[in-house]
Image (cartoon, rainbow, N blue to C red; front, top):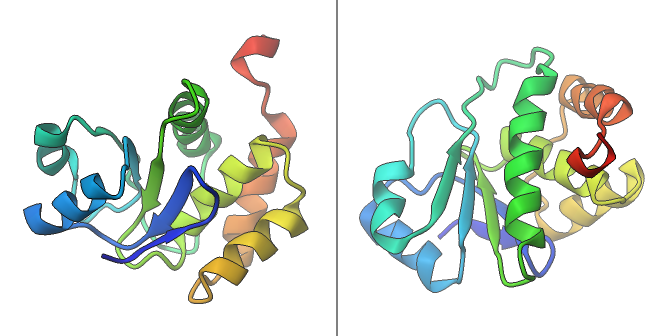
Length: 152
């Protein structure tokens, strides 16, 4: 299974695609999935395992991503990792190179990591990551305007 743990609670990687792969994901303790790929919705595969899925599909088109993509993902991610400390979040796209790392970067930024810290953490653990400048700018634009639900 193409899954790399970035923190104790957050992993990122490539597509799940099959029941056998979803079984592996479940056995790794994953409780929540953010599926960033347009190619496939994991919801049906995850249902038998009780894994919550956010199908947050975006094209890997190297165009700026709207704040709504990050807002949906952040709300879901924070629910996963803050629930009681036992949640495990898997963020993935088709290959785990562009879209999933972009969302993982946004999650880490909202959790308080600096841009450099978050990028280095992700790249050290998953060297295949390629942070497209436009995606990093999209994350930073979101982070500048983000306010947590508790702050509203």
